[in-house]
Length: 392
Image 1: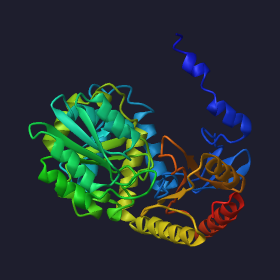
Image 2: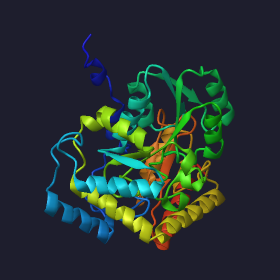
Image 3: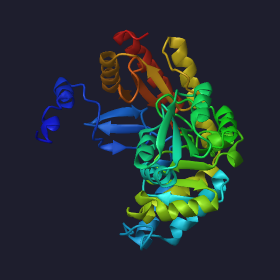
Image 4: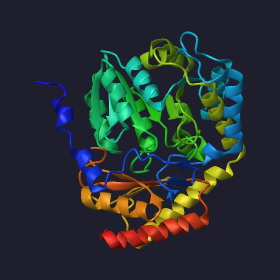
C-alpha cells in the first residue's frame, strides 16, 4: 500500500473550499487587535486569544523592536547550548515571582512546554491522569512519555477519585488539567481536584494558557482558587495574554532543574528570539501595572454571556472571555460561521473531534480593548444570524 494513499483520499477540506465553507487558514491582510482586514473587508475579531489586547500595546511593540536592534532576529541555537540570553533568565525570574513559584523555565512554544515537561516526568513506573477535555498538547505530551495514561470525565471529581483509587501506591502519579478549558471557557474544579490528588499522593500540573492574564487578577486559576502553594506545576503560553510566542513551566527548583536537563523539546529546539522574550516581559509589566485590563475583559465577557443567554443561545458553563455558542450540528455551525464572517464578525467554528458530537460550536472570545460599540454591533449580529440560521 502507498503511504500517500490517505493523502489522496483526504477530500473533506477541498470540498469545503469548493463549497465556500472553508473557515481555516484565512490570510489576514491586517490585524489591529480588535479588528482585522480580509480582502478589503473589515471584521471585528472575536476569535483571538489576545485577551488583554497587548499585541498592539506601545510598550510591548517597542520592547520587541529594541530587542531586535540589540540582539538580532534569532538566537540560532537551543537554550541548552548557545541560545540562552540573560534576557531569557530575567523573564524566567519575573514569571516565577508572578505565579508564586521557585523557578520558571521558558520553551519555544506552549506546545513544547507540555510535550517536554510531561514526557520528562512520566516514566515507566508512573501514571499521568488527564481530564478528557484537556488540550491536545497535554495528550501528546502524555503519549510521548513511557508511563500509563488514564482519563477521567470532564470536571468529574467522582470519576477522578475512582481512577486515582485504582492506581497502585508504588506508581508515581501526575494529574494534568487545563486551568481554563480552551473550548468551553469553564474552569477546572481545582478546589476539589487538588485535595483529592493530595489524598492519593498525586502531583498536580495546571496548563493555564487561557487563564493567565484573565483569572486570579491576572495570575491565573491557581491564584483564583487560592491554591498556588498546593499546585505543583503551573504552565502557560506567551501567545495569549503575553502577546508573544513561547511558553513556560514554573514550580519547585529541583523539579524545574530536572526538566531543564531532560525535556527533549527544550534541549533540541532553538530558543525563542530576543524580540519574543522582550515582548513577553513587557506584557508582564503591563499586566502588573494596568490591572484594569483584567477587570475590563471579564466585564465584557459577563455582558456577552448575559446577553447571549437572554437571546436564547447555549453558552455552556463559560465563566471566562472564552464563550462558546453551542450549536450541535456541523452544517449549521459552518453556515453560522460563514454568515457571521460575511456580516463582519470573525469567530471560530469547532466540530468533532475537537469537541464531542452534539457539541459543535462557535468559539468566541473577547479582548479588554474591544469597545462597547464593537460589542454592541457583535451582539446584534449574533442575534440576526442566530435567527436567520435557526439556532435561536
